[in-house]
Image 1 (tube, rainbow, N blue to C red):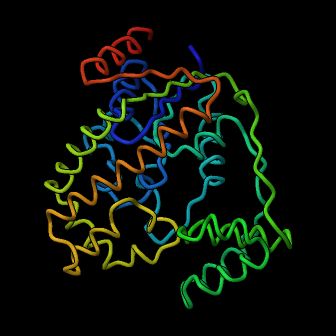
Image 2: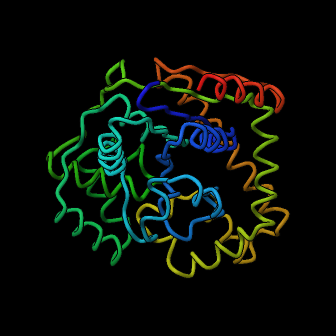
Length: 299
């Protein structure tokens, strides 16, 4: 058995369910490869494992940070590597849909320079003045990166930190074509039609479970002004609903559309960024169940 089993895929593809079943079967912990599940209270919107699932299987990088804490791909890779080495003689599972985290951890990448004191200063400036001045400074040092990142405050802060230390543009990130260590990569790939069906069903369920109420509480705590957690899908739309700009029906439709757009980007990423992965395609829920049973039967 490979020491690390990676189960990746777009949102609502069933990767968390498969990972949980496999973890129980082989008595393995799970590394959550999800940029938002690490935040406490960001439960419904991040499709976090249930309390029962968390009690049955150890999940790393779930409920470990407060929403105001920054979190980067480099942070994820360092922690995931520590966990991998800690479990060096036993299998572990990594499951999630944050493609850059998975790619950097599995294939390695040139890391950008960082400085904790500088990062804290930039973060303090962001909290006091907003993003505009920092964005302008980044645009001076690296206009290409600034244009690419203009709608992502978290990545603007990190890019400016690195560009400041480099005194110029960020280098193009390069990856190895083979994983850094012995692992099996499984990618679940639903068809676009099935993906839309699963996403619509899940968005309705999440709203019924209290996604709006969760959003209101977190927005009141400053979620939308945080450097990383503010990127969580759906909360900006919930804020518009709470402000009276979207009806509940319009909110539901907007959430489904935004999530489908995100899933499309994920499918493109996972088709192209993991050259040594096994990609399992399925057109409907019955085919997905057959894929799950096939994978589970191999362990």
